[in-house]
Image 1 (tube, rainbow, N blue to C red):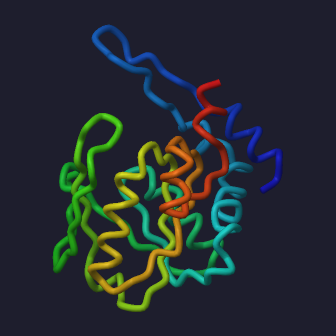
Image 2 (image 1 turned 120 degrees about the vertical axis):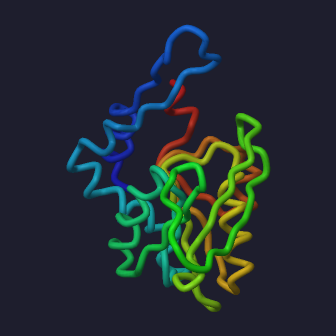
Length: 183
């Protein structure tokens, strides 16, 4: 990955204080989407560590995964499959394969669903997201892959903030670390 991209990702990132009553700061990655050079570089940079694994499809969770997933798929020249969450109000019609994540960094368990007709047995799946904090959603997406007979080849994330052990276990590669963004 070009050093300039890493530097721009760090520079354009912000922590926002949501105000009274909040227990934590909120990450603001909107600067990444506003910068055309970052957008152009994200797809190729995310997929670079996984090209040799020859993914046949990219899978990403709603909501911000739906931004970076297509960038990665385009860079690989493969299709894209969105993973839906019931809370976003956009569940697709038709047969779905579901999985529930283990508790995330806030203790929430997230339900994810993929249209069965878009994830085939034998697919080699690259999971993509903007941020991996615990790997909980990655685990759920890997469970969906297993249920469909597809093989996850790893996960590409813009920011990786999980433990090194989790990153190694789930084959997560990132462009920046949480420590770099926590500054």
